[in-house]
Length: 347
Image 1 (tube, rainbow, N blue to C red):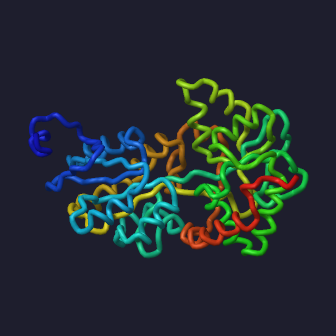
Image 2 (cartoon, rainbow, N blue to C red; image 1 turned 45 degrees about the horizontal axis):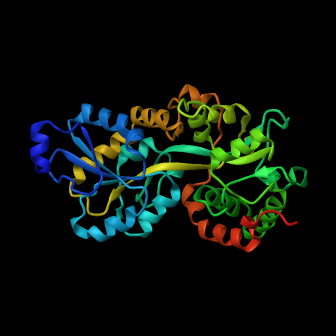
Image 3 (cartoon, one colour; image 1 turned 120 degrees about the vertical axis):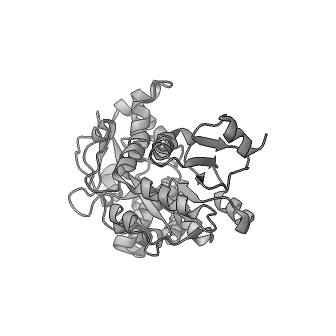
């Protein structure tokens, strides 16, 4: 049965998640290539279709999105790209699979610091790169990123791979704020304070704190929400219960944040509908829906956060434009290798 016949037969819901490729080009539809899991964006799709009558077809990829669109070329059915990291957005633009969009409605809802100056990408929600701290062993209620190099934390810090995109984003922000020389010295200090070689994911850092392997760790805010609400793996609730969230630099420049975002695909065969979808995603309604689903913060000032996210504490985001952070990612990656961060502390 062809795609259009399936639609006429009513066998597809408003959002169709395709595993292998055939996507519709008809009027009244929009095709989304997404790095975000289908279940996380389903409420957005449902709300958009209910409001506009436009059918949304989603192709989920866990890797290779840019390569796929590039290979499809001018025949690509992709209209909108959804990603989970500033690095992915920059990669999409650099890979030539996006096009600039100057849209007054979108720009009004999304602050300039969370969008590409040329209009090739836009942030929708943010997550803080924060410090997980032991409730039992850490009395501090405030911290700065700079303090992570203080010898008082020697043998007490855990983190995931230093080259992971989440950490590179933070390190790039340090380069942007302090310069390359300072950041190299700082990274060497952080390296010597590690309890072990960088390993695992953000959730496993919370587990390591609970077990006493370390006292503090770097992690994203949304993982705390995922652990708190994980009924399928209750042990993660125990990990979350063992930590408190400290928002670094809350008293000065603010906490480094990363974004989930969107971009208009280069060849967008349903461009009008793509722009309507992007305008919807930028709205307060959609930002609040999306942020609640993924335990993140809307980028729109004044938009509400979920009760779970509010329980972490109030975040003051760093006002440094993410485009400036992204420009220092390559240098940050080079510094991680230069100092041997992933080798762990010196013996």
